[in-house]
Image 1: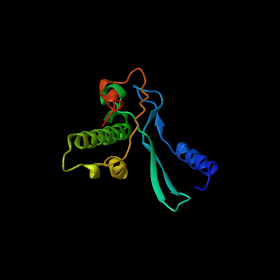
Image 2: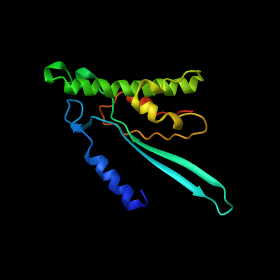
Image 3: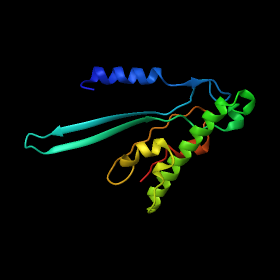
Image 4: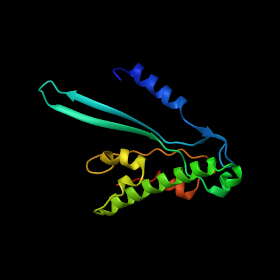
Amino acid sequence: ARDVKEVLSILEVAQSRRCVKFTKSNSESSRSHLLFTIHFNHTTPDGISRKGKLHVCDLAGSERLEKSGSNENTGGALLKETQHINKSLSVLSNVIESIQAGKGHIPYRDSKLTHLLQNSSGGDSKTVAIMCSPSTGTKVSVRYGLPRK
């Protein structure tokens, strides 16, 4: 994108493609994650080139299968979506815990989400997490909003 107007247009397209469904846990449950990446290139007046990347992620929330009504009796699609969402959030948690523990192997390739965020979740990168959870949020959900190293 070349300007703010074009960025907003792209975000509108992405938002229109998001899948939201009713579950017993949440009347407007996101059934997918949204990842928007902005690349920055800047050259200072004295010729120094700087590059940066900003990922904006809107993660679908985890849901307990029994509380959400996701089961094979509902056609199985909602169940599969819930399982995929929960797995990717679990992998993200494993990646964060591995980084914090200083482990040699970080399981970035265990999900598409963590693979895409790989170069922005270690080293000298900075991460800010903003968590919005309905009143039915769980303690497990709250862990994602806690400060990380």
